[in-house]
Amino acid sequence: MKINEKLILIDSFGRVAKKLRISVTDRCNFTCIFCMPSQPIWIPKSEILTFEEIERLVRIFVDLGIEKVKLTGGEPLVRNDIELLIEKISNIQGIKSISITTNGYFLPDKAFKLKEAGLKSVTISFHSLDKEKFNSVVGKNVYERVLKGIDTALDAGFESVKMNTVIIRGYNENEILDLIEFARDRNLILRFIEYMPFDGLHLWDLSKVVTGKEILDIIKKKYDFEEKPRENGSTSQNYRFKDGKGEFGIITSISRPFCSDCDRIRLKADGKLVPCMFSKDEYDLKTPLRKGASDEEIKNLIRTYYYRKFAGVEKLINAQLLPKHIRPMHTIGG
Image (cartoon, rainbow, N blue to C red):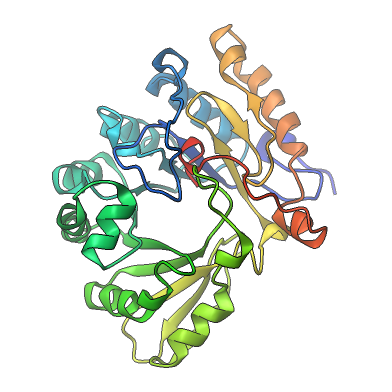
């Protein structure tokens, strides 16, 4: 079958990219222990892509078949006037949705502005219902502020409001049922995430991973639910409650990876392209961009780099080569 390379971004395993995750900054107003190093080295501001550069790259990616964009960080809402970038991207023909992952702190002030700018979906990272535990992990007394951010996002009327919770053995696995009830009460889509080796303090260990199966076994003790058909390229296996009151998902990056139909590609805040988050491979797009490369030249670079995309974490796990640390999560945004 002959493939029109102008309309597709494909790797050596036949996986086609449809989703682009853009880290707009590596900075964050929280210091979560499973994300941020104790002494982070920030990217110099002059090396961060401008909104105009990001917009141009998104247009190029759309020509290569990208349909969905997610903005991440660091914390993306620390970037001044982020709603202007959202408006630019949402107006690009071919983009079906634009979403954001945030710690929720700025949502009380920004949620309605983000919705007006064209943002379709918000995902809020929220890892504990215990106030003291939450504040101690994020390094600030912000528990009530984040709760207000969640409620404001719901009031703003986004197409979906999701809550991401990393489950870590010895930290919050005893809160799984409480988190389910919290999400059901607010009509949130809750997604549990297996702990991955992207923590800034190098604390990750396989023994700390609570698997998707363990999470399901805990939920089964209280709730009746059924599995939903998995969408192609989805990071999450989703389930609906049989009483009709919402759904939840589990991202099993460690125990049951989903590498075979991965359709994501990442762009770091400094313009480095990352085809696979579990590989240390990064490719510079900022330099050619700032040196005057044409759109077609940049497209050819992206095609070449994406074609080299790593097989995925499943290969590392099967070969027992999964490292204890890959890179801090704040540098790539998840």
